[in-house]
Amino acid sequence: MRVAILTMFNGLSNTYSLVNVVREQLYMLLQDNITVKMLVSEHCPDTERTGIFADERLEWRKIINSKNGKIFNWHTYTRAEDKIHDTFYEEAQLIAQDYVKELKDVDVCIMHDILYQGAHLVHNVAIRLAQKLLPNVKFLAFTHSAPQIHIDAPFPISCMFTPMPNTTLVYPTQCGLAAIAKQYSQDISLCACVGNSIDVMTGMCDEAVDIINKSGYLSRDIIIVYPARLNMAKRFHIIAQLGGMIKRHFGKSVGIIFCEFEASDIDPDMYKFMIRDLGNKEGLSDKDIVFTSDCGYKNGVTRQTVFDLFALSNLYICPSYSESFGLTVLEAASRGNYIVLNEAVPALEEIGKCINAYFMRWSAKNFGYDTYETYNPTEKIYMLENLNNILENMENNPVIKAKTLARTRFCSQYVYEHQLRPLLYD
Picture 1 (spheres, rainbow, N blue to C red):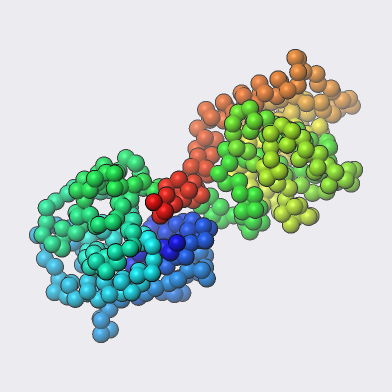
Picture 2: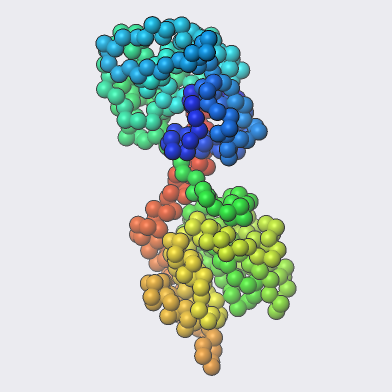
């Protein structure tokens, strides 16, 4: 599969929203090992290529935008009676020749606002001229603004209201499909929705990005992050057990990231095996649990990494046997997680009441004595009843729900798999 993205960018500034949309699409396509060409204006500076735009896998192609040293003036046309500038057709022919040269070896051409914007009318006409020599190329024409009211206009203004053959009209929301179809007098069956996506890892430190990329958890319904010393008192195994129950009994996809560092009172490999084994018995697969030490961070991760991972997770559970304060509770809360704490630990009870946490009870160490919990009728039923409450509370919490949907429904992985990729391979 070879895909071209036609934008006619003159620059790559982050302040231009379409640049960010294209950046996200490049991540999607390159992640799928698709060969990608970027078709931009000849005056788009190479020095502005950073991040994904600097990826060596990208093929950059400059489209003519001047003749004899004189830059083409992109006149903006909006009305049926607008007069075309004198050099319009000459420029369109020159641009069309470049389009044919650069698109003849691609399968799909993704156009952004080329058919929509009046300032791109010359490119609109040029791509229609080129298409006559590109019978095997499929086109996706994205519109990123409110659809216009259809007007009957003479050529070439009419190109802003006329569909192209072998072309799907694409809009970022379902609610706009009928309007975009009406603008181009196109059957709505030839229109499709591909939403914009958000890169929720923007600004995160390299460690956090590396761990998330290795885990592949961005699209999971539930992400649990638990930073602690790897010993039995921190009860990593209970978190694995609860995660398994959430997956098996409530049908949620679960990803657990343990940001652990070694303790001296237990063999780490033995305890990690125990944690995974208990998680497996309750319904988790080995891929549902990640230890940061297995990602290459043997001595733990930075505090910045923990904060960044908390920004992606939505559920924090602390069943710890003993805590003097519980700072990670506040760290998780500050990044918008639903908080579940062991009520039997005095420090966790004190903090939890301040932040309106959800309480469960496990055996704990108090001041001068220990407590031992019993469950009626069984511990498993106790856990399932509380997990049901927790998940209902998370679903009904608008902040938690919005955070989760932004990560799962509007991430590049979801948009690509459910919306863009089917159009490429249809």
